[in-house]
Image 1 (tube, protein in one colour):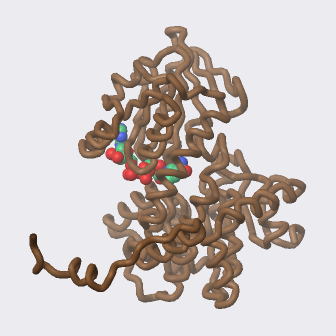
Image 2 (tube, helix red, strand yellow):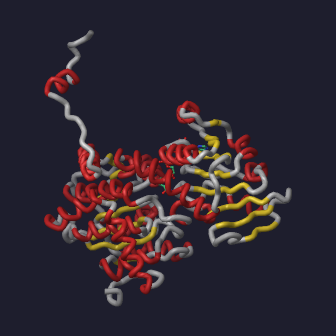
Image 3 (cartoon, helix red, strand yellow):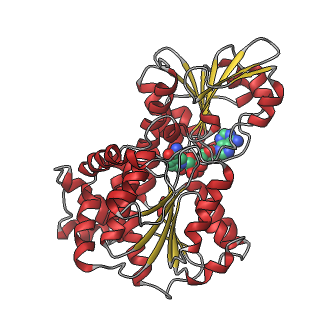
Length: 424
Ligand SMILES: NC(=O)c1ccc[n+]([C@@H]2O[C@H](COP(=O)([O-])OP(=O)(O)OC[C@H]3O[C@@H](n4cnc5c(N)ncnc54)[C@H](O)[C@@H]3O)[C@@H](O)[C@H]2O)c1
């Protein structure tokens, strides 16, 4: 298959290892597997061209297999230059017939040329993680936007960009906000990012969390997950926030809360998860202690002001432990270590979220794609919520696969909850 299928991957000899990892992840994705089996019978995506711009991981591979089982003609490209698992990309082409364009470490030009290839596929459905594909379909590749009936968006930053396009009146097709489904952000952003971000830091640096001061910037769904896990490993966690409600929540959850100007002087490990720009800036780097480790797990590599750090540093030593650790020696003599060039540390230094949590995110993706196709031409051009029944379906099925039963409302309770008559 590899010889005939259009693709651009690093090395087909990696395919056997990729296949093993894809099938290993599959064991932990029973909800997606159930949808896969139904898709095989019902072919809800038959004849549909789908272009997906996602982190090319073993879990994504299982989403791709599910979409193909549903009848889709699929092209996959990477949603980040450093998140591709080359063995998975090779196996997707060789073993699973997915036209894949993704190479770990690809430069900006290759990254965007792969996105352009996904646009040239003339998709009627797109799946995005961060809205780079949709953005291309609205700018240089806008000639391919006409066929698109809907797009699914996987992450918070992508939803921000798409809502901004909607508000500016430039959005060309309906979008389904997969990130905003409860079965996505409550679990993927919190527990998935929480665990895999810590995993990435440890793999890259061998950092001991116990007894250390860890600064978590942003106390949203991802930040809550990272802060809780670092605390569980014995770190003193400092949270930086701009939203007063979330800052208060962090405080009452037992974390120290302070501005970055103060946290910069105290932290030993810094992790940004804001979706915002330059949250760790020049003055913060300059104030950091000797040996501080700094990384980002938000979507884009703009959260750390690395151009300013590069200017500030008197010397830069790349790859001082492995390729993902760069040392910046400041005029004070202090060294600051930056992981993964400021890109998503959990995907660049570890394997991204565990399959068990991506099971729910990608179940929502597959069901949302089916929903979009069923409602082709009926959805207005805006950012839509995932229908609530898809969330309940995925949660019910996940509980079932975990062997967990829950209670049901009695008729009396249903009536009581729907009425205002009864008091004390
Ligand atoms: N690493 C991953 O695999 C992964 C997974 C899911 C989401 N993400 C990304 O992580 C980022 C955060 O996602 P989320 O779902 O937690 O978003 P969220 O909106 O729930 O939380 C972001 C928080 O950051 C705060 N914030 C914004 N600017 C700040 C600043 N200058 N200083 C301090 N705090 C600031 C906001 O007030 C908010 O509370 C997004 O970019 C998202 O796309 C990454």
